[in-house]
Amino acid sequence: MEIEKNLLNALRQSMPKPIADRVIEADSNLSFDLGIDSLGLMTLSVNIENAYAINLVDHVEALMTVKSVSELQTLIHSVL
Amino acid sequence: MEKIRELGFGELRMHLLHSLGDGTTQGALHVRIEGELDDKYLESVVESLLIKLPVLRATIQKIDGRYYFCLADRNHHRNGFLDITVDKNSPNLWQARLEAENNLLLNSEEQLWRLVAVNYQSVNCWDLILVMHHALMDAAGSEFLLDQILGCLGNLYEIGSLESTDNVFPSLEEDAVTACEWEKYVGIQNNIKIKLASLNLQKHLSSVGLNERNTKSQYFQVNQDLVAQLEDFCEINQISLNSLFSAALLSSIALCTPDRKSFALFSAVSLRPLCQNVKERSLGCYLNVMPTVHSFSDDSVSSIISLSREHKIEVQRAFLNTGRWIPRNYDVAIVENMISTLANSNTFGNDIGITYAESGLAPQYGKLKVKHQYVTARRNIGNVALILHGLKSDRDIYFSLSHVEPLQSREWAILVKNKFLDLLLMINKSSFDTVKI
Image (spheres, helix red, strand yellow):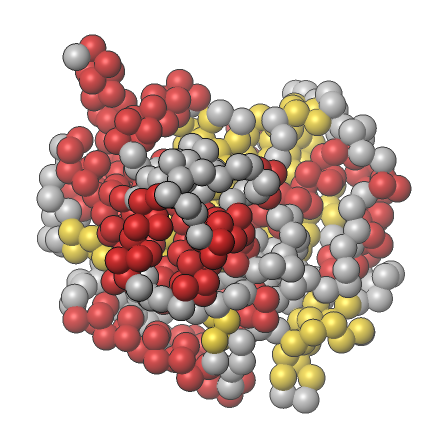
């Protein structure tokens, strides 16, 4: 699965600064590989909403179960 | 006085609450240091900081009906920021000292922080107490300030190379990518009120005037062995330590308050990542609280895990629904009126607050070792009747649990604290059982 540029940007903006240049792959784990903790997930959700012009309020539970980048991309497309 | 910028909505709200004379927005951070205090050098460091970081001289002034941060002159009140004393009492009595210092309210028109260094005669340790107005600094900002001071005292940093910042710190309201117009903010807040009101939450106690209330705190430590076990437990169950503590707090309060089934919890969340111009350690306050509502089922480990997961999801939901929206403008008269009515209020919010963070201080600064850190705040007015502050420093976690007398009794608060610790120990024991299986 190719990661969309919008999603890559949103992820990079939400990752901790010291590791923000880390390689992001479809199977990267949001928490372990990209350092996105629960606070980072809040920032990420805002960045995704802005990048895709969608509203994630009604999809919080699904968002919280997402583990990998590919799962996140799938979730975004289910909302679009 | 040099006018630097107008207060944002959150800052104005904190300033007006503070002006009621209650000190709701005043907090204090207590750090115990092992090693020798060079008090003359400490004076030099604080004086240098006041020059390097002009915002430390910020005050709040009302000019032509609006409120501004203004910079006091360099020599204005220069001795009022630092108080070095020798305490003849036992160093074990630091809790009373911390509360006494935090009960001395800052005059926002003169200064927004002060530092107290307490030396003891017979032991090789001393204390730093940073009393702060939250309009000027949140926990990250206060730790940045203490880090600069301790770094100099521990000979890690040179006074001349202390970090400097701009004359003004960024405003959450102007800088957050989720800033919104006042009308939208008011609509969102009204929706929350309707939701919370529909729960018909019972008050702990009511009808006690503001000037009859007194915040009392209990301080306790969770040592690194238990913390490590709890962290493992969280990883296995995919919950955060913050949510685990929230669930344990909710459960302990429910067990000590049998006549209530539902509780609102206000979790503090830093919105710094939403502010592009805010440095990791900028001064200023970038916190917001996420209100969530929970029901208690029982104190089994599985129920606490469920409650922790529910808390994690609900905080995220509260953030997306309400907590991210920050009003970039406001009507001064409406805000003034909203706060002034609280002065004569004899009712009281009935719910619970939690803050948990990892300390920004290093465990050691040269020969100076940080022995413990505790946060305290006055809660006489506000939405929360009981608040737990947790601060992880090195590998231990330091908690303070504050209640307000006579709204809540000391006996009840002690029961809550003991139950909270019992639950953490029970969770820890269960994680051992899991390993055995």
